[in-house]
Amino acid sequence: MRQAGIVLLILAWASCDTQDLQRDFEAQAFAVPMGFTHTSVTGETISADVDDWRTSPAYQSLIEIDPAFPNPPGDVALVSIPVRVREFNAVHGGLDLVTFDVNRIARRLDAIRSARDPGAYVFRFSPPALGQSGLVRVFVVDPLGELVSYGDLQLGQ
Image (cartoon, rainbow, N blue to C red; front, top):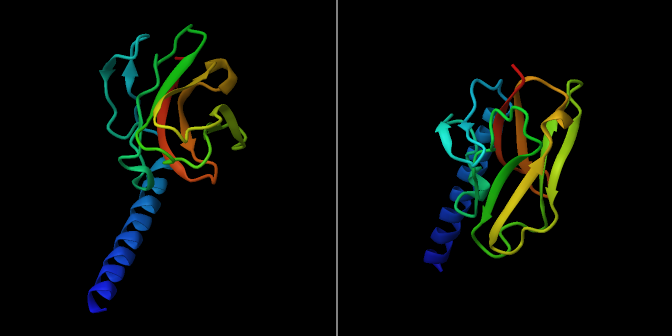
């Protein structure tokens, strides 16, 4: 009986720790963007921003997000953001790619309707749809609005 109590205490402590880490991650996500991961049209990383495309503590080891490409997009019609789901039912539903417009209103750029099965998925969107220039932050969120990842795009110059 005593061992069960200790196990529950450890699980509760780990849960609180993950919640704290998730809150810290979200605070970093809503900070002012300072750089971006420069990628080629084929997705090769030319230079990396260590703040871009990290996976949140809530989804660590369950989902991996690769950097947006190409970045900066230049004149390409579509930017792609590859997503890998590593575990069955890691996401209960789909994933959304969102950003905030110049009026700070959230705008969905693309959606993966169902990401329950392990495998590769891709967000795709047209950079002019953002209607912005400079460093623009985009967010990957789950169906409950929980932050999964974020990264920055360098639009226009």
